[in-house]
Image (cartoon, rainbow, N blue to C red; front, side, top):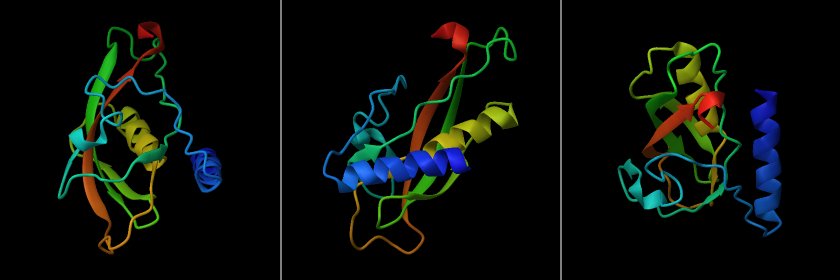
Length: 135
């Protein structure tokens, strides 16, 4: 979407300017990206996260009684550090919530790295999305 593309481009510009801006917006229970090594994948993640968009917050009135949603997202990172593919490993039971989690992960940016397979470096991460009434 244009919204995520604009945020990604903005994050990339900051990275290229040497600022390496990473907003502290992540409240995932497993500290998924604060300690990137805890992500699983075909190899340990040695690239730092240089950008991630603001985590989506769900409308509490739509998901009344369900305060948080947990989902695992599998994704692939290219040589330039962009997430080139992301898909849910499991489901929350709500396709629109699954899609929000996938779009959130697609907006992440990592440090560039050489010798990445053409299909990308595979990783998985756990995401917890919360409703606005839980914030």
